[in-house]
Image (cartoon, rainbow, N blue to C red; front, top):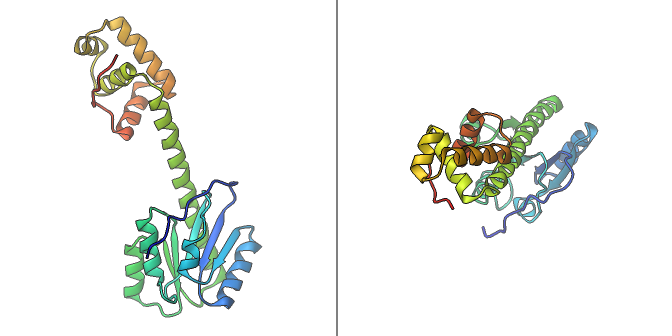
Length: 220
């Protein structure tokens, strides 16, 4: 397949359930079910329709039929993964078996339901999937904020951050990069303030997550 990435366009924070099923009765029933509990829902008759639709950056999940015309549910899941779209997937099928469910879960699906399923089963699966996506989006936003804070540091501040989070004392940092210990303390204070941290432990965790702990760079 040669599709562009269905981008996660930013809108409000309402949740959306995407449904891909070639059976119009199933699409209608699921749409009514999700709307009855206040969820946003968008339905598609094929994988191609979904791939051509922009996906908003709000907590979302995908209810996906395994057997679809032309592009199967498994193929769509693989294509979304290739495109970097990390929607939690709930597979549904009228022809389920154990090997099929194992394949779905190994591929990263969060649930696998066999038709006919109970409404509550579906709602429970969707609730869990949306919670999972909500956490993922929150983590991604937090990481973006941290990266922006790190970019606000001067080259010297990044150098000091790298060394102090690697375990060096202020005087050791001063000796390593050829500045006074007092200057190191000043840079360290600036780093703590700009990164929004109150302790060295927090700063170490941030440096570890950013991959800059002990990665000494040239300062000015």
